[in-house]
Image (cartoon, rainbow, N blue to C red; front, side):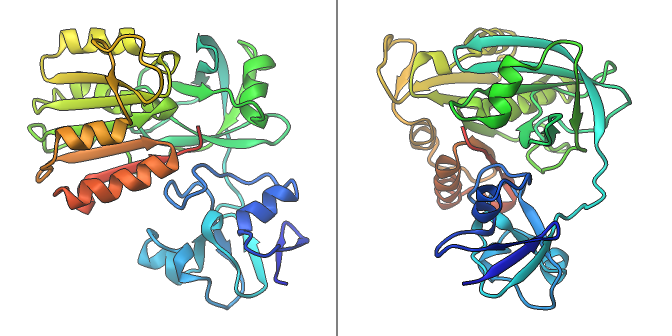
Length: 323
């Protein structure tokens, strides 16, 4: 049985268990998101002079691979490992909660205001940390602004250690720690005429909304923008009104709400899984830019499908988080 050392503690890895699963089982507070090797929130480094499993380095840069970085959520150790977070001295910034809005039974919009100027791209994500040390990754759903506010769409999970705390105990005026922005799922300048396809499930809408707002309001994107947002039921389409208003103000923005479960209004909602609906409508994606956010299995499947339908890998941007 293999052992890992983290934060001066040793843990045994159970059969078929990943590094992340072992750390969480032992109540270690480490960042993570999708648990599928996509979002890279769980990036760690092996301090031993041994190679880590190559399957845990897919998507990392050549330099990161050389320096023994790996993704904890997909790493099943082949040897004993001594581990560290990539930024042991990670700088935590401070923000004040300025707004909480419950837009459905299990989705909350949280707005925080950084005490200092904060640089980010709409669609990137940050790690949020509460006073107990619990850390979770959330995408930024707004564009940079003079007030230094950050908006997050938080799904309140039944056993969500952070989300349930945020819903019930986090009040306006309280402070919250957050990290610098990360991720490459954001709008890219220089191709304002390019067609954009955005597919999101659940609160995977958050980064997509920020990207769309950035494209339309800040960069005057002229190409067609197609957003497909999916949920099992209508309550999960919590931003319908705002997205409808956006489509009314911008002729090149098109919004398609999708339901995989019971459909109360077949004229309003398209029936089926959001990624299948989107990729069946647009079967030739040569020259398109594609953004995928939401449940990890949907993101991974959609990434493969988009590539097979002509989208270049460098034009596919993905964030996968648990929802």
